[in-house]
Length: 380
Ligand SMILES: [Zn+2]
Image (cartoon, rainbow, N blue to C red; front, side, top):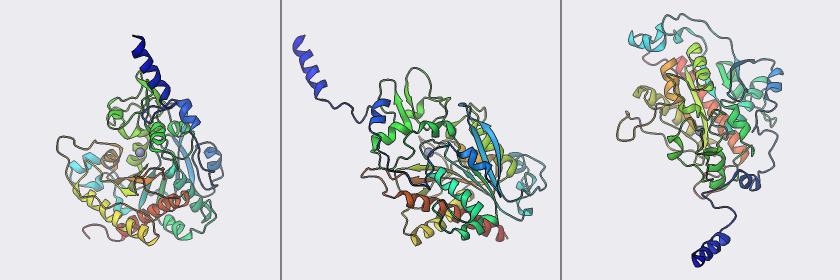
C-alpha cells in the first residue's frame, strides 16, 4: 500500500529524533548538559578510596564488594561500645526484652547510621556524606565553611557512614548530577529503558526484578550491575551483596537511628517506614518535625510530616530495606528524600548549595534527636 507507506514515512520523518517516552543511550548522552560541578559536589566513586586513605580520625572498612567488583566503604567515628547481647533482635522481641538483643541504654553514645545512595543517580547524599566526613575530619565542609557545631554533635555520637550504597549504579550515572535535567532525561538515567528504548516508569519498572534479560535496554542507575535494586533485594534470601552488608552492619552495631538516603523531584521529606510498630513511626514524625523546623529556620523547602498507619488495603506498602533495618536492629529507621533540582514545573527548585545544606541539616537534626533520646529515654 504505497499511500499508507507514504503517510507512515511522513509521520516518521516529522517526528523529532527522540520522543520524550523513548530515548537511546546515545541520545541521552547527546542531551547531557550538566552544570559545571562545584568542588564540594561528589557525583562519582572515583577517588573515594584515595580520600579514605587520608582519614586521620575516622576508620574505613570494606563491608562488601558489588557485583561489578567495586568496594562498599563504611566510615566510622567514635568508639564502638560493646555491651551485653544474648539474642538476635526478633528473638529478643519475642522474649519481650529488646535489651536482650543489645542493651542500647548501657551505651554512653547514641549510634547513628547513614546509608548513602543505594540508587546510583541519587548522588545528593553522596555529596552530603562526603562533606560530613570532611566536617568530622576538619570541622569544615568541602566549601571550607565552618561546621564546628555539626562536628561537635558528631563527636558525641558513634557515626556509621556508608557514603555509596550502590557503587555500580553511581558509576553508571555519567551525568554526575540530575540538576537541570528534564523529567524524561531524569527518568532515563534513573529507571533506564526497555529494549525498544521506551523509558521505564514506576510502577511497571518494579515488576521485573532482577532487571535483566532481553526486555531490558539501558540499565537504569537504580540497579547494581546484577540488575538488583538494593531497596527491594530479597532480604530473607539475598540476591546480591549490598543489602545484606548494609543489614549486617545494623545487626552488629544496633544503631539507635538509621536513614536510607534517597532523592526525588519534590521537596525534602522523611517517609513513613512500613511494617514497623506505630511507636517507631511516631518517633520518625517527631524527628521530621525537628528537622522541618531547622529547614524553616534556614529557608529551605520541605514536605509535611506523614500520618502513622498500619499496613493494609489493596496495594499495601512493600517491606523494603528500611523495614529490614528496623527488624534486624531495632533502629528507628526511615527513608529521606532530597530534591535533585530537576527542570520540571512539578519539581522542587533548589540550588546545588541548597542541596548540601539540606543534607547537612538533616544529619544535624538526626544527631540532635539521637542525643536527646539518650538523655530522655522513652518511658523514663
Ligand atoms: Zn531512591
